[in-house]
Image (cartoon, rainbow, N blue to C red; front, side, top):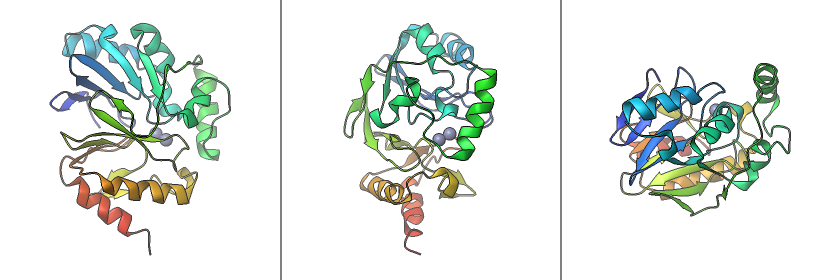
Length: 229
Ligand SMILES: [Zn+2]
Ligand SMILES: [Zn+2]
């Protein structure tokens, strides 16, 4: 994604060139979905103040789709500034709490080492441990292990919007997996993606690619259809 923008009413993508994170206006409160790499907290604060004309403290909840470094890099800082509650699935919580090495494969661990040498992110204690079916504002939590054990999606049935985290990427008009090396548990991953077919989806927001603004159901069906081959 290019610049920061309101991508549909009340949903703002603050992604830089490669990692998306989102501000969602929900009934007067603001939800931050993921935080991007380290160093983004002032960008988030600026956007809330200048574009939304709100206070950073109006961010009441920070939902983490999964604990990979490119999604939680600015978490400790933005939590400190906003006082927001952090929500994450327990299976991904250890890493942000500083209790374990990263759960990703070799590539991700190499990236973390690189960033770890540059940035110091503090451990964060999550206030909310998410499970399947929980609600964050209008959004229902769907547990989709595979890319990481505690990966979640967030679904708004009214707007038919799904935040997918890194479960899928949207490329050349198709949904694709994040790639074999980035799927920790392939069987669980396929199950998780099949589970998403139970939802009526129009719009899809991903962690790293352009959004799908319509026809999400069909794209997802086509993707799941490739599993049997
Ligand atoms: Zn990831
Ligand atoms: Zn990612």
